[in-house]
Image (cartoon, rainbow, N blue to C red):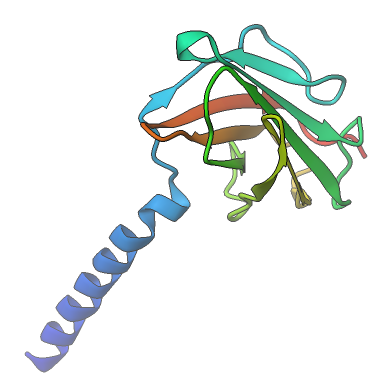
Length: 151
């Protein structure tokens, strides 16, 4: 009976830890906005219109996006006040770990930071870079999809 009680306590502990970490692992957003048109982050920046007339643009440098090399991530926001900007990089077919750099404000609605994309052991990987904008009233998510980094 003691072993059963310990097992139940461990399960409860896992549930509580998962609940506490869920905002970190699964970013919550009040609003998700789709990109304006399909684009290729390997070739150019990608943009999306925000509610109320705003706009967000994501750029990843260098281009094409390399594997396991330092990347510069830039976000430009206009038409909306933003308190915080993060970009969540996630593998769509395989969990590649938490990769969500917080971008530093550069003034005039521009934010920048650095990261590195890990190598996928299968070679091919579909990625999603979700720009997370925290405004005074809501959290907006803007997902941009792109293919495997070019070797």
